Length: 189
Ligand SMILES: [Zn+2]
Image (cartoon, rainbow, N blue to C red):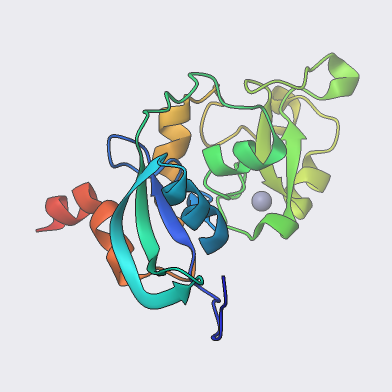
């Protein structure tokens, strides 16, 4: 396909068959090439389009801005235990001082230190800023008197999904807005 214009920010928002985004954080976006391919393969429905058109020798097609999968993808019940998901569960907030940070400035802390037999699990790992992590050191919560603000638990995918809604990406095309954060809008209204 011949493309004669800039195509930055021409990603398609990908919705599940129930018209909810596959994920909020990061927002489920496909590059326009993948979106077009999926349209031609009949795997998705085009819900909204950009004005931009790409041309092939035989036809022109508007770039899709919102697509929905024809087949529903069930979300797994258990989220992956990753650093990032721990930060997301804790809303990028140090669980000791309560301040929010960017990901690069966050560490994770074992509530029961590993040197005391603490394990690396959802229930024993919390988000912490470097100063809090350092001052807590290898002491047990009972010794330091410092306890996490929220009792750490394993979140469900749904809960992480909900947390992610609070952190929208910098760029939101207007055609996406109908499919994002709609129930919070309704609550406010
Ligand atoms: Zn802190």
